[in-house]
Length: 450
Image (cartoon, rainbow, N blue to C red; front, side, top):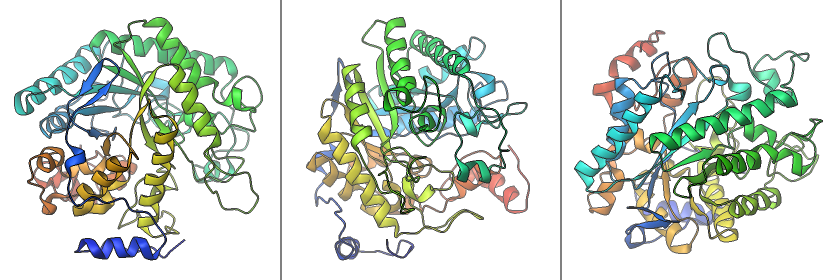
């Protein structure tokens, strides 16, 4: 692992030389032709290769309906040229809600969630002349449940994360029956999403939220832990349950999926069994599960790794770390290239599933060249952009039209994540100051405003 450094490159040969000196493969294409064109997923078509990743805004109303800021974010995504919009983490039960300002899907909020979907499609049609694929991510927050009146919902003991969250050793684990109920609630919410007109539902299995943490629950007894078959039961049960409930193949199955937790065995998923203290990737179980997902008809996987809680450099390499967070043990390019390599391995192992990559924001003005190289090499099908879409939602359109503007890119300052972690709303406080300037100024003096 190398020493952490901030982004300082001004010429392509500088960043390419840096990668080569570290023995890293950084895909590259001098032209961006491979980024053009539509993508077919089953019977549906994404009009461009750019995918908005599901970045939670924490700007919903307290009842779980989208606020005007939520509508604004999605209108900007829609106008920016992305061919696939992965709607952010939406809770499907009050007890599994991450915060008081997370979107929630139920009968009460359904009309406004539908309006958000419809306005997103309308804006894309108006500005771009196309309609993007729109998938909804349904989330049970698990140990990261922090809404008022809710408590963390644990499926297994993880000493490092229990200690960080001050979880007592005798805190109860969710029972098998409670996990069964969560699975049914997910299927109910997926059926509602289908009725609202979403193109598909995301069986979320990433970043150590409940379903993701179950994948590594080797210490758990009962039908949801221990063996591989038990640990993947929730993911497969959700997929099977949705397809049994909604037989229409036009409603697609997708997943935001961790390929690698970067948490030491036995507590991590996609890691080698070792007692060395270093969590090296081992893709055997993730690739096995991806094949089972393919057999069940999953058409799209948004690949990712790690967790933003204590491992942020794994899934979103940055220039500035959040206060009181661990020091990154590696150069950001290592994180970028690891994500590219693992996604490419998964994409080539299951070519029938279209995959999007992640972690590109740190690359700034070199995003077009690197992602064009990734697509050209067959390392992914879509270019997935998360933080970047808060800063520069028009990036896909500008790349495709040859108008890319390096002065608009995300600078990976981590303020969007930091303010969210303190209970504030998510936005780009650097590039979108007209909208979020007051929020950021208040935060800097210790006040949270919404």
